[in-house]
Length: 127
Image 1 (cartoon, rainbow, N blue to C red):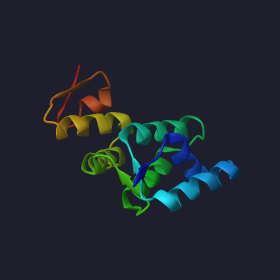
Image 2 (image 1 turned 30 degrees about the vertical axis):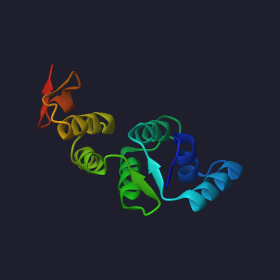
Image 3 (image 1 turned 180 degrees about the horizontal axis):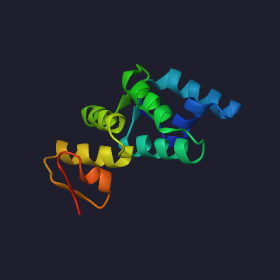
Image 4 (image 1 turned 180 degrees about the vertical axis):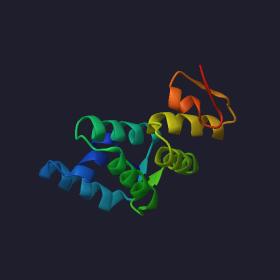
């Protein structure tokens, strides 16, 4: 198994550059499944929403698809799954959901935040 950088994962998802997409697909075929770090996962969500204007429902489909795909292995999959569930069921942004679930996994609650919606989640404290 090999790891993928954000730019490789984005090419695989949006396929907006034919040459880079072919190289990313070849890397996946030769080295898959690809390990996706939490940093890459968050960067990918940011790039897709800010550069490619992906909506919350599109990001949810992506996050669920990455979890279920045999082509990818996510770092801390239980925390990611819990964060995706919170993201789907609330108005809280994915980075805050993931940060809360990582704190929970490490036994580091309460999770203090100035984000008003996130501060209302179980385990969080709005400051």
